[in-house]
Image (cartoon, rainbow over all chains, first blue to last red; front, top):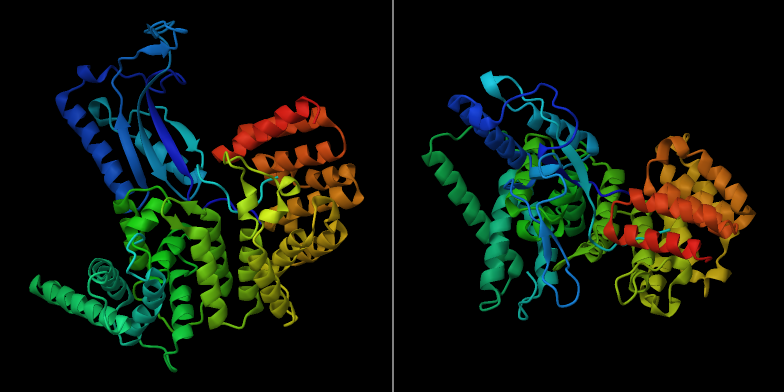
Length: 145
Length: 393
């Protein structure tokens, strides 16, 4: 018998850029009304509180937009760095929310809720959220094929 | 709770369901009693290594009772004591084994989500701390604490004296087993311990079937990974590494279950595991007999493809070994709609193609399975199988 684990983990990724076209284009946050910025932040805290209360929260982090691509430079050479092939357009992750939920459906539900966060004028942002399943790290106790 | 040499952890944990059931039967609220016992348990871990109690059970009961009294006092002081309906203790004598069953039914209440059933069972019956359970599932301790208290809230006010659903208890223990080993907590062993307790509490042959299945599967654990942690499939395992004692016990438990004459899915799966364990080499595996058991397993459901696709997939492998790879692949076709998105379906097809000598098709299936795998070890294993098949076996 091979049952799936009851609680898969998912990473809900937010992007500074990349992904599908914005459903409803909105300006960068620094051009919002300060009250809208506050409402946006308050909503995010609220989402985390809800997840904690439901026993689904694992982790949440934000990333700065600055990026350095690094690769091995070869023997006895310094690492090679660049800010990317197309620094203005390439996909850029802004942060993540990790959750431990009973199903993929629940992960999608959480992502949709996150995406409903208020933007300018209190309207939902309809931001695209990238939902990814986290692989299980431990050895299995049943035989693999 | 490991690492304190002077503390007999097993003995302490075995007391947990007895003390908890005692408190609940006395009329304490399950939720509050469980919290109080958890605190008593943490205190025991701190105090006992230096000052072992004369009567551990009485010690835990009295410390938990003190906590309950304290909690009630502070609640009263906050003047928001709601009137609670005290649960009726069930009729009959409070036997030790009944305690386990009584608590398992409660923790595995069908209304709870599987993850909550697992967490609550590990705490209230297994005697693990919230921190240990959180570590085992790689979530923050606060998250696990919330999950447990939510589950207990959902159970609040429900009657305790109705018979529970044994099938759910069995599934929960199986889930605990599959969660395996993480850090300091060996959930596979914990599941075997709980299943053993369950067999003392009920004569149901399926409980023994589950225990047998866990033992017969756990017996192969030492051979399931090589020294680098890579997965070794059954046909390549070093059978001298299998735990002969667990196999002997598993077979004995299984025989006593089958003797009752009421087979069920766990007994049947245990019988299949026993046939694998019984073969001195992969070539000597009694596939016709395994196939016959799979036929019985499928016969338990009126729509096995939808209700038990994992069994149909397992049977397809047996069909491949008995009737040939093409027949096995035909069997998997029936599952395309249900399991076609899952890595295991592709992995089985890879295996069957390999069995039939079509290495190119096998490699493609393994590669597809690897793309869909949800565990790192399995993904790496499937990539290696794909590479091996591409290189010609």
